[in-house]
Amino acid sequence: MKTFEFSIIASGLDHEADNFERHFYDAGCDDATISFQKGHIIVDFAREAETIEDAISSAIEAVRATGASITRIEPDPLVNLSEIAARSGMTRQAIALYSTGQRGRDFPSPVARITADNPLWDWPSVACWLFKTSKMPKDAVIEAEVIKEANKIVAAGDKDIAARLHRKTRELEAAL
Image 1 (cartoon, rainbow, N blue to C red):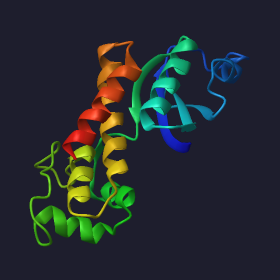
Image 2 (image 1 turned 135 degrees about the horizontal axis):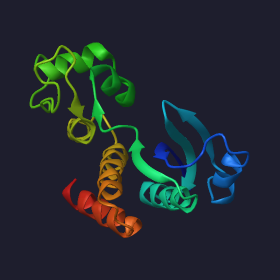
Image 3 (image 1 turned 180 degrees about the horizontal axis):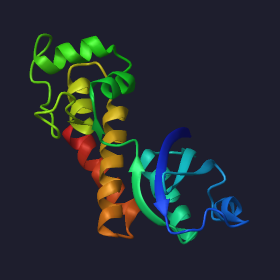
């Protein structure tokens, strides 16, 4: 078993209710810290599971069992250079050099705020590039893609979470 850390952002429950935290604990979120920030319920998990797909799908089911509506799963797939550096364990300067083509080739292009001073990249694409250049393990790519896929599933309101996440992982394993 491995411990996977991620957050589920939710809404729809009264955070001031006396049994607010207990409701999550009883639903199976006994491995999470519950907080309320900026109008959202934040459920920070450190979930033990065989795979990231199992960890996320079981956590989503547990949060849904409370009656809360899930907004998204974090860490967010959109990242700036500082976040890329933090997630990869590399320096910001090294990542900046990769992003400008001064070191290495074919670093992914930004996907948002392209003309701004602080553009954003798609983390799964960057993680894949880092894996292909031997700077990141394959598991990091799979985790990034599974979280992105989980967000698509949540947005679509799909209930078949585990099967879709496992299918995505099989596709990734074959592609990598």
